[in-house]
Image (cartoon, rainbow, N blue to C red; front, side, top):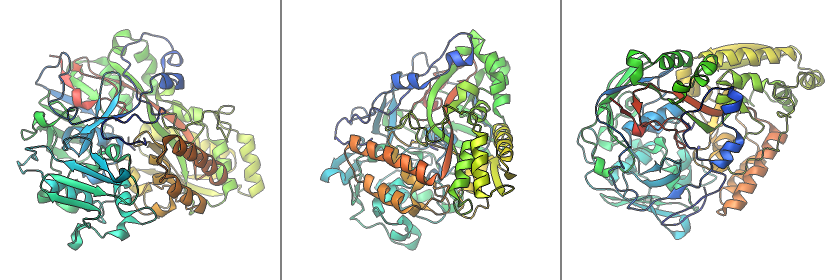
Length: 598
């Protein structure tokens, strides 16, 4: 989650917490073992860069040309599964983010350079926002001549509608930062405002549109991260005139350089150029290829073999969120020519095993399961040393405040689990033979990992009932409060470089509801109060320290989720795909630059 995820404020440029990791692409590299060539935490530290806030000039299009870029041709995209959602308000996973960069636009967006430096710029807005009232008021002005794919003009009413529809009951899977901030801390945002279908707008004291081009956000507390927040695909614009509400998920309207021409759910999607997109209004995107043919049902093994062979149409093919398959690692790493068509990066995600606290109520049982997890084997099934590494904490190394020394379950000493220590806790708690339902996605990687995890937990005396779920609706299923599962893995990465995008969505008890990201259903009074307190701290250093302390409390005193592994990205592309580089924003390929070399 994003996907595919800083605290400070200035009207011009803001440099934020130095813990934010932005990564450069790594194309090339010769043979050798994966251990020798994969990214490490030291690489991540060396590659860290501050995020900046751009001015109106930085927000003015067109985007600088990509060296060597040529127009024309159709790029093929291999995808493992269908997109969970097409409605922007519902998009909160990595593949949806990559798609959204091509077809949607919001008020702000990230501009990224070749060194991985990120700058927040105005997308539909003329700049990244003008702040006043100590960070409580933000004003945005729309650029001229903005239109959707149907030629309808985009005005402030569309922005207001985009925000207000997020409160509707049918929006269940997207981010909630903006809604929660507008409604105020300590408030359940859906109770604060029923949504536009009730015939009322958010009050002008919260969201004002004084004219067709001006949008004013007014918050009760300072929201110094608003420019970063608004870059999220979940806040991309849904034009009011063409909003089909629940049906919008099937046929959304594009504002970006491409639009959906054909969509066969679970099979394929065809993107073509959006002729109503004006490059002069867009400082970050390009429209080099004539379109993208997205083919689904290609797992990592299939993608890797096809792209490595580089025959026929595969030369024009690419991955979105695919990874070099574990079984093909040495074939890729040992092939110098193939390595020149790869990118690597250190991603912000933590894969963790969530305990459904409504069902797995005994902390001793949760601790036993955590101790038993074979983390090293589990991450190796997802790309080996190029795909990840053992996680010691619920915080990623890309998150400000991360402490490598904090290791409450001795992951460093026992990376494949401590079966004996876990057995001891199982015996003490009288849990022998206890049945637990373990849910997992129906992809090869998740299936392999399920066997590894179930086997380890059975070794300590538990009766594990495996339940396979369609990966396309994975987060929708486990996101239900009454999901019927005891254990399930989810991956979470910061939405921007701050722990404020990790702990509130994952561990705030006030956010327990269908579609929310509190997958463990933790509702601890101290955690709730600390989240509310820390969210009001505007000093970066102080807030970072407080989040790190909260992380230790959650892990040691509650243990709602067991960290398993951190993710790294290793992708390969067809030889005719140009403009490829790793994106520290999406944690995958930067899709805005793609062209065909010939």
